[in-house]
Image (cartoon, rainbow, N blue to C red; front, side, top):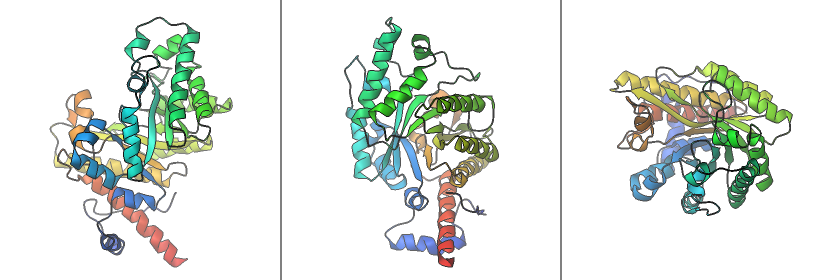
Length: 360
């Protein structure tokens, strides 16, 4: 996917060099969108979906369908939602998301089969033997992955198994089964859908640091044992004043590529300290742009996902006190500088491709 990088002097408007390409889009019945431009780069540009908003908010549905070519469930494909009682699965919300995606020619990321914060009460509040827990986990993974076989662009098989101190996180699954629960999860997912792309997903390891080293060592170990793992999801929940450098993210992606692994940006948002200033929005836009460009230039990155798209439904204010405005549309669905920075960058790449094709 890598092409020569081009700078955009004005991140709030489309530069004159791109007017011809964009006039062609307008003649086709409307301006360019993230999705329409991403298709030309063989790129998934996606977002996490709030199923309640999808059902109740017409403007949310319209923006979602216009701007993205991939969706992932914010919460509705996690274990506690899909199996609220033992062996009683509820796929209603997940099926609704897949139906919406099919209706709008969108791909779906499966998030997530295994996460320490999505263990239902029926499972956590009872004593189980190791063998029983292995059977429960195998049944859950094979039931879910098997149901959606051939319909999921990538599965986040294991989510956030590395703690902030870069050791294996002390979780229900680690205590009950042992560290090999990670390997088991990938093998069971592969058995249920041998063609599925299987990912490890985590936060805080986007650049080069102790946590990304621990993630690298984990996936390297899995690969050395022929565990079917195909990539690493870099969540990219970052602060506007403390984001990793694009150079470090690129280096991290490159070392994953050396292992034969994909790297995907899977949950990006850029939170701003409240109250915000206009300069904060520009800084946020620069970070979004830099991370998308890093993905476009990496040989092993074809997916860029934001964790929601409108500040109206962002998880950030409820989790990070004093922070907000993390997404690319505001609470009233007005496009922010961050949105324009992504759109302009994709337009820039599209124009470069058109110029190269014209010169051939």
